[in-house]
Image (cartoon, rainbow, N blue to C red; front, side, top):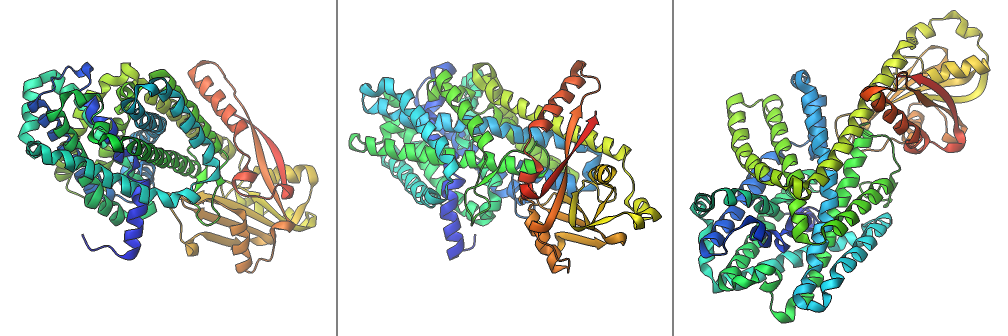
Length: 623
């Protein structure tokens, strides 16, 4: 690695708070869960070293090799995450088209799994931190759940204010957190240095041989140490690959290993500490400050996951994978700081439900991991497609790399799938609901486009009509939004049918979302002046950008088309979906699409069109 510049150092510090909050708070519960009574493991020297060996190599293989070294190479113009990877595979690569449905299905289901994780992470993180009060004093035993709910309520209510004011503190706080993890671990490693022998993978192999099925099932708890690994890839667009890798190899990985090995040393010296080995690492005078620091750190981890859910939803909206919902920009300077009320309160309801139902981080750990490991398996499969079709790797080499990674992924998957009955069903249920909505919406939009095409008139044919010369014109500019720039908008035909006039200047505007994060300004607009004072405008946006009518008008001025938003009349269609045959599964899907269409955010708000300049024309469409 090259030495960090001032900018990289600053980005690395910020990345500590955004990228590593989730994986950084796993020491609160991961090792304790490995020795949970449900796994039936004896707490002895060999088992402690075996577990530590599995933890060490899990962090090395899954995070260091898979994500930091391999997956992060697959950036979509600098952006990462499963949706960015999906857009990269679908939009840029013709070789993928023959199995695009499989790729699309895997990518969408992988993204849907994130929402279940986004509910589980605040619940298990904050609850595990507050549980330290039970270690400090039995007085707090009955207050852990109420305190957790108060913290979570304040946390979700604060989302509408944005994270700009406190975001600058995330990095420094997590820096203190990782420093504390290191110090707590080193103090006990010095007392029991034999735990360092667990770096030898033979301890992990022997652990499986001795414990057999119990050793395999405990992988479900070992997996907790790598939850949050997807954030390295998903947040790559915010910080760049180098700062994220620098933070991981330079601080986060060493701090985590020191703390896990310190907890193992504590268990060798004091087996009764298995009740809560993380908090019992600390001296009695440092327990309350550690609880406060852990609580703040878990709130930061939760914030990172919730912000990720907002960002993922925003990308899905721009790609037209979901019906439009309200997006609030909480910072005038940073477009990435957004708040989506619908998603926020859905997450709040799910998180509170989880805390009330499971009531302890140990019980939540039984539900945690199954969805995330499924997402990791999907990422590995999509990376195979990427390596073969985009990077042009030799198929055998790509298969070898994918097979090696899948051996680890599927081992974790097999151990975690047993958690379905214990609560792992919850994130899968959330994912299935989201997946159903996305498939219903995308297929419904395609069906809608097909219905439009049946009645569509070619624009070239329309302009060749000699009767256009005699159509009365009224002063001003009209903008008709159209999904197809080559077809005459139905809104324009409906308007002409009733009013028998056209405006002096007619602009047909089409907005496309490309499969790239951002479209550079020179390529963002295409303007074509047609006959009879018609103008065709095509605006291209990336999935990380928000379409804005004011941008389009500003560009038209630069092209010599003088007009202002205040003097334009925007004609938008308001479709009413009518289901022809509502019976059966297909009919139910169509009814769901009609419901989503009827209740989505109006186009005026989504495209930032001034509402007092809009005329909506009702269109009745049968599907």
